[in-house]
Length: 488
Image 1 (cartoon, rainbow, N blue to C red):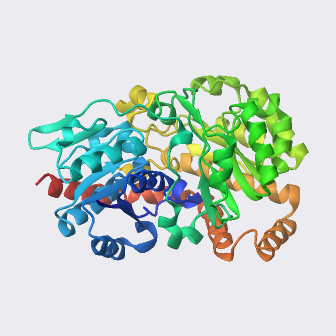
Image 2: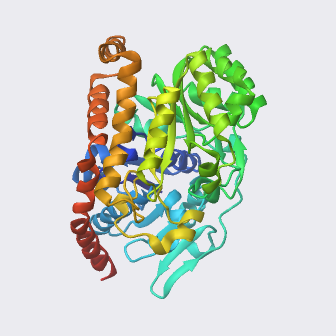
Image 3: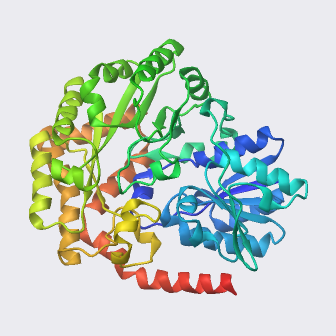
């Protein structure tokens, strides 16, 4: 059968999609499993083609199944708009929605216009679904689905058991070859994603990853990782593991395998500060595999704050990990959660931390309860909007203790302060020369540099965030009309 996967268009407000613009690796993984089962697949990235041209490509492919990805809560209304157009233009196709957000909150997606919600790992569910459709078997016998029927949603049972990740087919990267040069993170482009493990054993209350993977943690072997990496031509690689180096022995083996392979990239990876503190030699080993930037979800500057988000770590570990990375000359990006309930002194405390550590690369996320997380269950009655575009971790969807304009003045001030610390430590001219050198040597592209500079300017302005709140009523009205049409 022919299956067309569509990545919804970009929203254009702020948040994650402004800082990172990455390939739809989840769709590539599912497509790889379907191709292994003998089906034909297409991936259309509507963020790059635009809706009209992308749908024209899908029509030409004549799919019997159209898969829509909804990984982020911000994509909900965009995904529905795409589903409506698909229904109008490909009326015979079965419309399936999958992704983390759909699995976290399937009730929201079980609505007219969407035939099936696929739950769990797509590589396990989608081949069974498409094969059943091809053989004219009833879909209610396929596990891991929520079917939309005239009498209401029908659940088909728990998704299939998750396999050893080494057994999964390779991602179908050839299906996004025409887009590959457009993906980036910060100033680095082109960028590819690499998954070496799935899941997380920790249970931070704001996070949905451990919920989706049911607290499981599965790793690919070093041999499998090197084989996948050998298929990636991009010089920049973002390792998608939520906690890299969780298995220290495997981390060492993987570093040795990469060094032996001769493959050298600029790696961006995510890990915990306590791992760096206990095993600093891991950082040194990976430094020998290529350039590296470490993303650290520090979340809070003190132990009380860490406890409030169920982050089983300590402020002392956070501070020591920063010092280790600085001593080793490894790039790092700490990220902090800004609570809507903060007073001015809380923002001031975080600014002081940046001054004391010199961590001018810090990023700041507004505490955002995502449907399906423990945090959502705790505070959903306090959430003050159903404008899902605002759930981009850069806007407050919970009441703020400060007046909203003052909250954003303080929040934007964090981004501005980090830039000021950079200039104070390195000098404005030196910083600009470093960026020019990176451009001249090809480590970054002009387009990525321009977008990065624009991003810094936008995040430092309070009105950038207030603008989205002011335009929210119009977005909600349009979404309401869309939902009414779908229901009709």
